[in-house]
Amino acid sequence: MDDGRRAIEVLKNAKKKIGFAELLYDDQIGKISVIGVGMRSHPGVSATFFKALAKAGVNIQMISTSEIRISVVVGADEVDQAVRTTHTAFGLDAETNATVYAGTGR
Image (cartoon, rainbow, N blue to C red; front, side, top):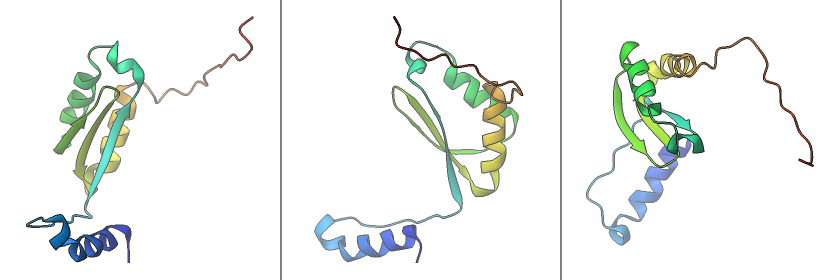
């Protein structure tokens, strides 16, 4: 049994204690997130994300946000396209390698 179905069974067994009317389970969705502390200081991140998905024709079923994260839920058949589109929109397709300098800072 997968995690989703197992969670449904556990919740059904706790229905009287928790007190809910209905459970819905959908294993034909996926979540794509853009995450980074720089989102607080760089306006337009959400606009870039949503514009790219709209241009690609990706249907967003749900949106969730926090100070450092924007997540969308899309159909399972659109996850790969959404990831590729998001990757391109934020310039992550580059063939060049990043150079990282490390040290003590002295």
